[in-house]
Length: 503
Image (spheres, rainbow, N blue to C red):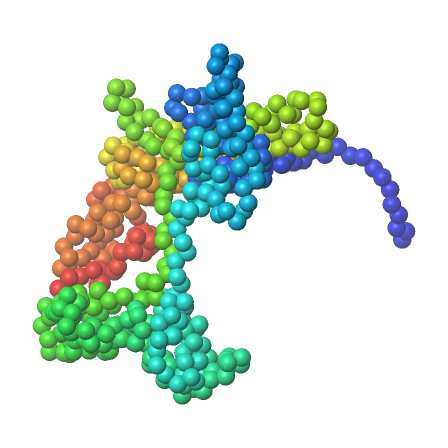
């Protein structure tokens, strides 16, 4: 057997993704907040790309109108008048502004304002950014610093605090903490003493090792503040402690009659105690330093045009009209006086800026086309509600628009639309479905909505079990298996019939 090398040619067809195509797909998939962040990064890296606020009557295609130069805000044409002194004074002011803009030292803490007196947008954005909230560990350590205890206990407390999880629980055994604390050796006795002190810190229930201990700690804190009528009045602390200590599982399974019999208490008293227990926090750590949910910014608004009786689409928060390529750099690119390296640098940046603008415009066009299909297919949803949501597979939309199904998936990913029924994720309108007895198509989301309505209108003293829900849906022409109903009920966080029963 002999090994050798040789050259050969063969025809082959392969799909290659150019950098421009990759950028276009990335831009299409970005949600609005991430797109704005991407634009900020591009503006920092690309000097030819600029942004400004525009008036509604100004051109919105990212390019200046025909025969018109693109100027920065506050710029005016220099007109020589009989009184030339005013013009020269204005030139002096512009020169002074440019010098300040270029040579303002970083230590000044701010950038120079624009020539028309407006504040710098990026500086305002940074100044208005919400400061990072204090996390739970820092919050507890700040309190722990004021606790009076021997030094070994103080050290043990600092060690324990770092083991408390974001929900406020200590899930690691003290024996394990002692073994893992090699850098700061502590004794088990000091850890136990420190934990008792930590459990007196705010928020109440912190440092608990399970839900039962967490609730009991909060009850102790409430009872200790009996002078606060708003918090402690109405509590039956003995009954509540008994319920937490002995009957948490019975409460979870809604076994009120059994609890009433064991405690020799009326069901009404137990229900009142449970109502007060419901005001406690099963996850006290989440009260401190929790991350606020990011605001939802819809990409488009769907509204009914009363004149045409058609639903129209308005794209919102579109950043494309505010972006443009600096006219100054475009002129420099054409200027032969500039050296070759400068022209190459400007050429690359102008090309990258155009790719970005075209990608953003293509993103807008694709999302608009997809939303138009949704509006045409889901008119009954906008007029009558979620029960009338129709099946709309992505592959069907892709065939209608003549694009790949992956493009549709990217277009709807993390996009939101504002409708007459509220704000919804765009992906909600794409689902498979079934056909009822009348031959009408229904999406699975519409079926789930009907299930929610059946449960909401049931007799709470005798709630429907899964078989009875199947029968109720059958009466409405929807034939589902029991296991499917159970799956949808769990998806919707609807408890079992036993747990929904009210006494």
